[in-house]
Length: 564
Picture 1: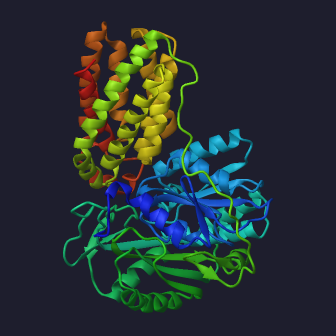
Picture 2: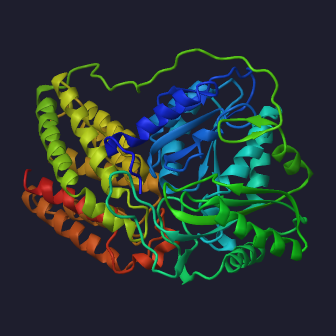
Picture 3: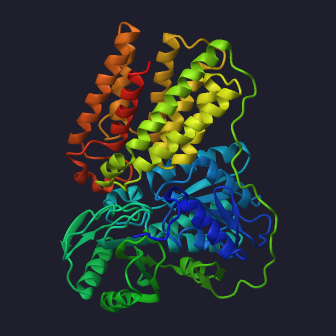
């Protein structure tokens, strides 16, 4: 387990700060992560990589000449916020566009997508690159729904080299797509990982068994099998990857055996001995083999195997020079330092115009509600985390705790500045999204912002306005998250709650009807298989367990029902 901790809440930020100082010849801090501390020429496409913390050397360890220009660093196993991603991308931009690369996880898609929209509004050509190498997480027919695991290393290495070589943004995207299509990964786990400050792992594996098809955010395998010998595991990984081999690919491969955090190098060398034997027996030419820790999951015991099927172009970019704290090849030549100081904080929300007296009264009530929600969710953190760990990564509790606490603090600050309901809810929504990260952070941020947009800063906030605001909040969650009723998400509770509220004949009844509908909706998720998010690859495991997002929404509505 992670033993060297001060305050668990500060662990990710302290780790990034320590890393940036230890490797200051390569990187420097900026709000949201790190960027190169060496000069990069103008006119170069920038590659920013990122995701949750806990995966070192991914992603910050790959920032340097020939590889990435910056890395966005979220909380442990949780997506960075849109504000964090925007900050790092702005610092990395050199005038030719910015590409944000990450594993295909719902929270990352949402938050990095928000950052792209902000960058485009600034006139920057920004796009996302989604790695989809994990063969256990979706069928070949749905390979673009797969999640990204250790394939992050070769796809981003190749893409970074294409950026360094001077390709324009369309050319770099083409190279990334080719590399992603040529990359496959498959892994096994022997023991789960433990979040900093926690007293138990996110999952356990029975003695003598292994989880097959692990995730890198503490998700258990999609199935279990007897542990077997090192050669048995090597055979399992090789056979699985060759069965999913990309069509029309040659025989030349890069093979990467990756440790998840607690597997000894000597153990991995023994497995590699079998891997190389089976690959060569299958007629493949191992152009390069890599054995080590490249994409980890805190202290998880496990390994994964990645194959990249090369063509001439991919091989050229794979072997191109790079120099980063965690990955080096060849010589990048002499480099100059870039000592420009960068912003270390996000721009804080502020009140430009006081709200009307009526709107300020509503804003005060909203602030009281947010503070009550924050206190509630702090007490429910462990319960929600355990519920999320059944088929997800266990971060829902901590995300809801951090997000609601930040929203409540921001609301109180804005209220002191005479904020109306819209300004207060917009600021609180941004704070929730930034502090929580992950899917829930983005969705709750969007929900609060949309509600505030309808209530305004000058209106009274009557019953009709509240009804329109709730509908706008639901619409924002559905639009951003892409979920509908039946997908086993918070929408299964939110949609019926809003429908019941709108259908009620009087306000007092509307509140009770909405709560009852939400409770029924959350309860119904026990019988559903997750279709979206990190729980999707382990959807069958979620049967019998209610969705964490729907459950936490009901908790919030129960708290509010007793107050308003």
